[in-house]
Length: 105
Image (cartoon, rainbow, N blue to C red; front, side, top):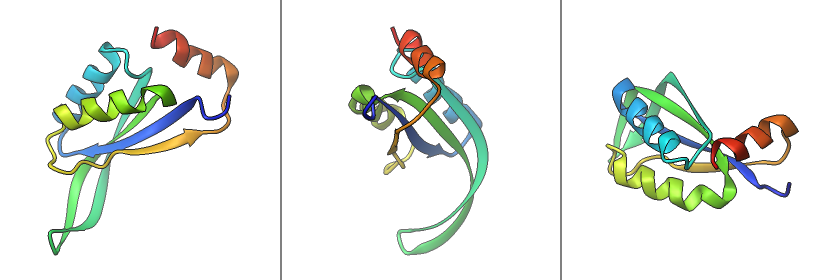
């Protein structure tokens, strides 16, 4: 399986933005699944401390599709500099990983 699958993380500023990004990624078959959850982010941006409500997207896909997912996120994301982080999946349920393959076909 050598890192054939990955989890991509991004955050956005509203439930509607999260839904739009998730729907685009899934309907275009760039990913198998996107989970969205509300979070609170603490960070420094342009020299100022911030505490904001955000929505975290957990994006499940094939590693080979990372560039396409990144391009789609950069095109549709409301942030100037969105978080886009790839985490390799090194182990997983074979049936779930096969479902990822099937969902993206």
